[in-house]
Structures are given as structure tokens and as C-alpha cells.
Image (cartoon, rainbow, N blue to C red; front, side):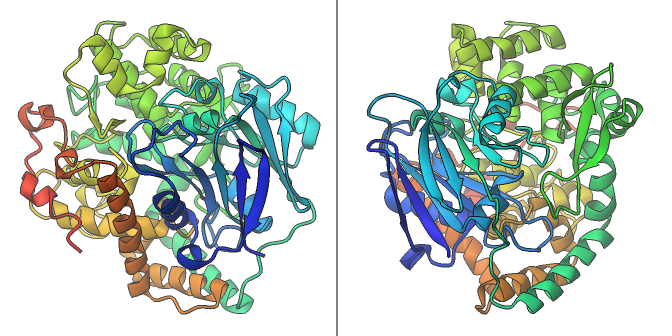
Amino acid sequence: MARILRINMNDLSITEEKPRGKYAGLGGRALTSAVVAAEVPATCHPLSAENKLVFAPGVLSGTTAACSGRLSIGAKSPLTGTIKESNAGGMAAQAMARLGITALVVEGVPADGKQRVLKLTPGGAKLLPATGLKRRMNYALCDKLRQKHGDKISILCIGPAGEMKLLGASVAVTDPEGRPTRHAGRGGLGAVMGSKGLKAIVLDTAGTERPTSAKPRALKKAAAAFAKLLKKHPVTGEGLPTYGTNVLANIINSVGAYPTRNFLQGQFEGTEKISGETQRDTIIKRGGKPKHACHPGCTITCSRIYHDKKGKYLTKGPEYETVWAHGANCGIDNLDAIAEMDRLDDEIGLDTIEMGAAIGVAMEAGVIKFGDAKGAIRLLKEVGKGTPLGRIIGCGAKVVGETFGVARVPVVKGQAMPAYDPRAAKGIGVTYATSTMGADHTAGYSITANVLGVGGNVDALKAKGQVELSRNLQIATAALDSTGLCLFVAFCVLDEPKALQAICDMLAAHTGKKFTTNEFAALGKKVLRTERAFNKRAGFTKLDDRLPDFFKTEALPPHDAVFDVPDKELDKVFNF
């Protein structure tokens, strides 16, 4: 039975209710944003008792739909001050769906100041003391929880960064091997979890089955058609499975949109050393895994397992964004050093994009030099220790820039920009500027048409067509984030209309309600309107939908491009 669980950390009560009214039929981002918008005062402090942390699997999570293991986590972000949905793979979404949990809403703050662990089983929910878990790094924490609760549990947890309420703190999600390698990284939601006194959530699905579908045969048929289309597409069936997300490094570098040394250049001379091709060769040579599914039913398998020089497990991936953030953005071309930083981020519980950007700004400030891999690793260790400098770095690029007097800080609404320079890929610049959640490539991934030729072609260096491109992608993404499907299926959807129809068919078969492609678009628009309305109540205006000025005035080599999409055009993105 679908249910919303409410966990009150103040009085330690646990209640449940059916998802009625405006919450009925929703999942993923649509549900997290609906709850936050309806129940969280827009002007509240994000770390106060008034904020709420919402976990919601997508509508298709737990079903036989391929790549349907995404989990949405929502709250008011302490990093941006906006509404936030952060998305992660791993085992938790499917586990929550098996337990019949449509949403988990964590409310209040602990009256006694103590940490706790929430355990969810088919028999119910319990809050347990987090004895001996304070300041535990994520890997050791997960080992400890498995020793107590069994090997087959799934875990959501925070590391020391979340406990310290650092603005770059993530929420970790365990993968099929029980490792905390999948993270809801963006927006500092790990700090919100820390403010609630919640160190971890343990999910035990023993004895459960998949969620019941209204029309199981129709779902099976639609799911099979969808999986077949994913396998046939060159990106989801070949590029990502072969090289992982870091397949993009050489591609983005070649078009001059690979941000280098805190967005000073658009190409990095050391890209080949940290590319997806080199990464794959290194993984195979050392006995790692070049293909890996972060949850059951993933057909894209873009995750991978990275071993150190001695052939021992070190970390996952690392992913494209992580390799760029700690690599080119910091002038570092050492893949092993980047992998070590990725492991530290996962251990401490940090957003890899935010940390790479923060270190890049610190390098520009002269705290350490560009290219200093050992220095970058040392800074991350400072974060884990909670030193004054570490806390500054752990709060992200904006705070580092303010602390050290740096003018060139690549953030929007307080959140660091990912691995695409908006001057050389202008569609992504529109998305960075106007996203409801700060600079975020996943909100409307215009690299598809700007660079990859997926879903059409829009000249990356010209302003024309970028607003329409970003608008359509933001609408589609908001809907897709509500299904529980991985965002990467969008590559196939954009090129193959049958793939979107298959998604709608799966949604209809699972819920038993008609769901058309028009309703898919309407859902995306509804989510964006809800999020924009919250931000308006929080005090955000069109003036917040802008890139930092230096992107408009500093020409980016090698194209000597600036971001020149007019402000009046940016203000039209949400004209729907």
C-alpha cells in the first residue's frame, strides 16, 4: 500500500498517511517539490526545524522498467536558499518502493540534540540511537550498520560534512555492493539531514516483492520495448556502457567548452590523461570493472569500479563531473589523485562538483597553486577534520570566494557550475542561469543539441535558439525526474519518439491511469511552476536568473566567446 511516512525528530513520533489531494499519484521530484512547496515556509532558515527533508522514489521505481532506480531528495537548500531536488541512483529508491513508501518526510530537529538512525522494514519504522556513529566516515559507517542490521540492507547516510552542516554536504546512497558511492550531491541536503539529527536510514526489504502494477502484462510489454530502444541508441547502448560518463571529456574539450583552471580557459592540455578512454584502459589493466550497474535493472551500466596501482578497490568511476571538477578545473591531470579525491568526497559526504569548484576558487586565491594535486587532497582532508579552513572549503565555491576576496566565482544562486563553460555551450548557460535550483547541468542538458547532435542541432556559439532549447529540456527533465528513470534515458528519448511513448505506456500500465505524451509535458510544467512559486516567495526575482558578469565580459579561449544571450531572453524561459 502506497503511504507517506512522517518522522518527527523533535518528539520522535512516526505517523503514516495515504498520499491524498495534491500528492496523489506523484513520485520523485514532482512529489518532493510538492511537499516542500506546500509545507515548508519559503523564508525559513534551511537548517531550522521548519525545513523538511523529503525522500521519494519515482513512480516507476521498483518496477521492471529499465534504469528506474533513481531517488529524489528535496528540501529548502542551505546552499542556494531555493527549493531543491537532488537525485541519486543506488539501491534506496527501489527499496523504498518495495516497502510501499511513496515519500518519507523528516520533520523538526531533535530536542535532545542526539543523533539517530531510522530503520525501515516491512514491519514498520523505528528510530534507533546512533551509538558509536558520530563523525564516522561513510564507508566505515556502512560497514558498522551492516554488521548490526545484516548484509542485504540498503543505506542512506551522511558523513562528517553533513554532521557539521557544511553547505556542500551530500546524502550517500549505497550501491549493490553496499558501498556509499551514489550521492545526492547538489544543494547541501546532507546538511539538512545533519540538522535533523539523522545519521542514517537503513532499509531492510526482506520478504518484500515489487510494487503491484495495475496492468502487469502491459507494463511488461512497454518495459521490454523501452529496454530494446535503450540498447539500440549509440549513447545509451554503446558510448556510456563502454566509457562511462567520462566519455565526454575529450568531446567537450575538443569543442572548447571544458572549463579549465577555474573557468579561465575552455581547453585543458592534460585532458587525454584523464579521459574516459584512458580511464577505461586503466581500470581494465588493474582488474577493476569497466561496466557496472548502480542498481538492479540498469541497462546503461555507466558506473565502473576503479582500483589503485596495487589492484585494490579505491572508488567508483569517477564520473565525468568529478574528473573535471578535481581535474581540469584545478589544472590536475593525475587520474589516481582524482580518484583519491573522489573517495574522500564519498567518505566525508561531499558534492564532488561543489568541492572541485571550491578548490579551483581557492587556487585562484593563491591558497594552493593550480595543478597541486597533493595540496587539493590536503584541502579535502581538512574538510573531513572540520578545521576552520576545511569548513570554508566544505561550504562551497561561493563561500570560498567571499572569504578570500575572489571576484571570479562560477556560481548561480550560490551553487557551483558543472563541467561545461556557458560561453562555448550557450544553451547550458541558459539552464545554469534560469534553473530553479542554481547552476545545474541536469536541469536542462542542452549539451545534447549544442554538442552531441542528439535531438537536433543548435549552434553552441550562437545565442539563437538557446532559450527554446533550454526551456523544452527543463520541462522534460522535471517530468523525467518524477518517474524514477535515470536522466540518461533522455538521450534515447530525444532521438526516438517511441521511447517517450514507451515511458508513458509504462506509467499508464503501472498506475492504471491514462498517461499521454501531452500529460508528460504538462507534468514537467507543473513541477517547474511549483518550484518557481516557492522561490518567488523566498525572495528570488528575475535578477537571480543571471550568470556572473565575468562570463559576459571575459572572452573564453579558444573561440574568444562570451555569454551573450540577452537578459530579456532569459526572462522568457518560463513563458508557458
